[in-house]
Length: 259
Image (cartoon, rainbow, N blue to C red; front, side, top):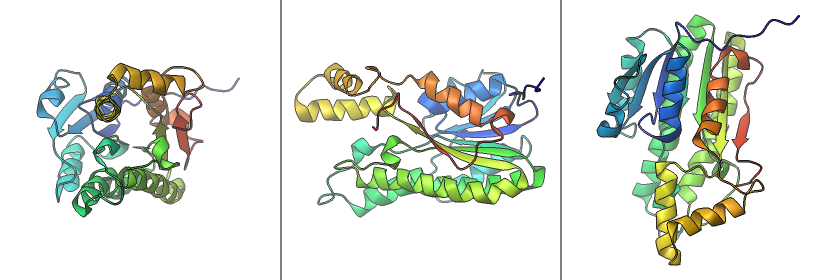
């Protein structure tokens, strides 16, 4: 009989960004429930405070776009022990973007700082602990926009494409030292960020927000929108010992939709 690989994370330290809402929040809770000591990081102090009473979770308010923030966040996580789990869910939404003719360099740079630069910086420091501990998991949140383009979203699409390229290289570096790195590519999920995107689209097209979501659901082969827990279950599996054979993969969670 083949032994079942445990998904228990007792004794592991996890750094989860974007932890105040949506996928990041659910991932922090799920990893803590499996025994990990979690540092949850986000910009929204009020929302992050709601995690403070969750067993196993410590929180820290930080904007990863600020110089030195990633180093500070990692140092805080390392106070809990060697950091061998990273779930990078922080991101700047594409609804803030404009057509390339009107896009600003400052907006481009802010998106890159949050979506891609911080992913590199955190992979850089966490990978060193993974090398020392000879075990680790890195899960980066990209998007279906990481494999296809969309109008008026050049910063977002470029950053999410970049996350996939970063992941594929980091995966090769970690493989010899016992670590893995994978990316999740969610389709439309009703997170706060996606809700703001729907609001912008609804205003532009003179329709209701619910009509926007109905269109998105209808365009999906399953006829519905991906649930947050469907993404989170994939994240937590990839962060567990049970995912040891999966490395360097861009895993789409979109119910079969390309977007």
